[in-house]
Image (cartoon, rainbow, N blue to C red; front, top):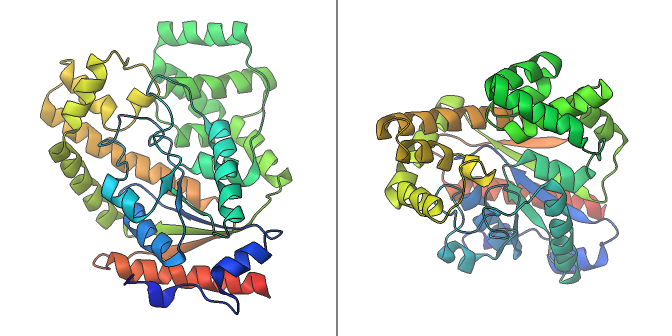
Length: 339
């Protein structure tokens, strides 16, 4: 028996009947939180209780062959609950928030047609925001300006470009990694074209945007020191599962370190080790440090999301306990929609 079956959201006609009869309301549940907090395990229990599927909002799990470093759900997990929007493209193929939104909307429509409540789970805030509010189109790329920025980056170095972005658009700089040159240059391109920081443009878009969903956004949080311990433990587990070998295989297949996919956490640090830039111990130290910084940026992003309900995970709390609390909040949300 499903351990959460007694907590399945209830109504006079049941969850399936409710969703089928209420598609005009388009109910949607989103579960977010920083890396290593336990979203995946909690989401599986919640999805089983709801009798639905998981729509993954993770910008790294879209890549095939990158399983260890992205914590892609195992085959066993996928047998328990179907996971969608993972393993979509090869590591050298482009993928962005706009494509995620298009594919996510198709999956959501399919779930509605089957009377199921969509459950979006992930840590990529931009993907969630794009799904709920659409995307700010922004000015089209200026090839001449972009070429000039790329030349500046080669001459001055990526760190110098990041420092410039920090001066003109500190809010965007805080959510980007200094080595994410593609996004740093795009933000500088927008600023030089319009004189408006990208963060301000996004903020104005959010104020005008409307969502087609009645959304419940739940954010998992926990004491920072405990989360950082979990991050260190997760890195150790990834290494034990073969993160170094997985990175080596990707490099041997010809995937460049300059690819967006290969700059993601784990692969960037292990590639540096494999190519002799620093020792294994230093690679591990860098990975743990960078993952902690990434989690901090995730929390900064999610704290700015309006109408987000926080669910604090206690240090020794079981997955089942947290899942029960999440399902209770979803039940309350659905009852509210019923009026």
